[in-house]
Length: 598
Image (tube, rainbow, N blue to C red; front, top):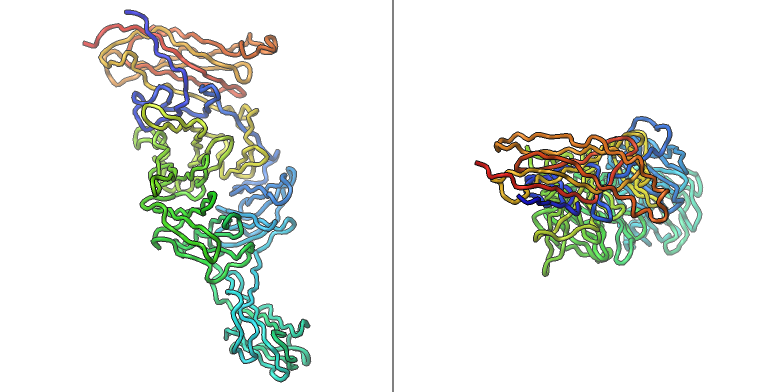
């Protein structure tokens, strides 16, 4: 029979662990690891990372990683165990102790950075870190000494038990009634005509009746409109409504003027928001219960003109500035399961839902959630993937956008979507995902100065395209081809004669193992593997000798003799040698039809 060929000229399809290896696209792999697509639609071994600190800072986990944009770009701030640390040009110091050791999220406003750990609310002003001291609202103004009259100015503040009220003195009255009885002790102050009085002083002083809620001046205040200001304490609101929130976003109509908080398990559907440009003030009425109350809020995503509120089973949109903001439902029936996976991917809202990675797209007068992880969802009991991970692992997933890639970390794996390579093929949209595993598993990501960093137990690490190992550990990179059926007929036996590859060097000499897998002639389920090329080392290659036309000489064809018979054909290319990697540009299988199966 005539010699035939089966070429694979691109590898842009990425990983597919959901369909059988015989049914995936030619440019996809049923199993690959530590691979990334290159600009020529070939594949590269991935780059590695290096340790940020020479000596580990301890054994506690780095639970989050923040870049403090309001000050020096050299600053990292990160919670490590129960401590909050700051890095200044590679030297770490503790700026706060007593945090909850776990997930921490943060936001910046007015030059400060604010941290939430699900229990506390902490601020860093560029010099010191401390628990947030809440704004003290002026509750009523210009009251009469007996507590009547006046008008309300502010709402009470969730995170401050203190409140102020002003009174108009009448030259005779010495007793001034606050709006609340049964006051609590605290930092009480009385200011009369801009003079601060002393507590308990015999003259020009004051005393407090906490049970009845009034202040008595030892000397009557002169007549005047609002010339007496009293600060008292009454924990009318529950501060844990705010401090127990777990995620945030800044948003405003055309700007970022307000902080939105949620994730409090006591109020699963509730969103709180701050006063304008004041993250120390959460007014008593500044909240909304969104949608069905037992459908808990999971995450926020800020788009051009809307703050999207993603719940577990629905998506809502908030538009406008307080107090005139409005909330409408955008999608119902599906939502978000992992808060830190919600990102804008090339302008499209993307997150991890109950059925995998989805994108929210407009459809007519409404919206739809498109599944974009079908190829990596996996199939339970056959091949592992995103959806074969436990619900707990998926709920703890986190993601980052970097280098035109969406990096999704789940358990001990990173699924990477090169969204600039999304394309159409075989009547469907192909989302090219690949899978990475790291020698040091990541707890968190962030991008600084164009590089991606991650935190781990006791240290930070920096991904670098020039790194050829995982901090000194070899990167195991491999690619399986699809399970090919040349000739497109299962009842034909083929003689596989040769396999051709075109490689390109990455870091000089490269050791590559090439293995082929061929089904036996009898049609049994046993698959035999043959290690055909254990070592390929182009040690005669000297790129400097070919300058300036280096590109002409950097590609190396490799011809592998096979001469074996079978029905299906599959190959594996692998490099797991320290400080080495490979680029595979294309492959071509030569075969002839041997005979029909009897």
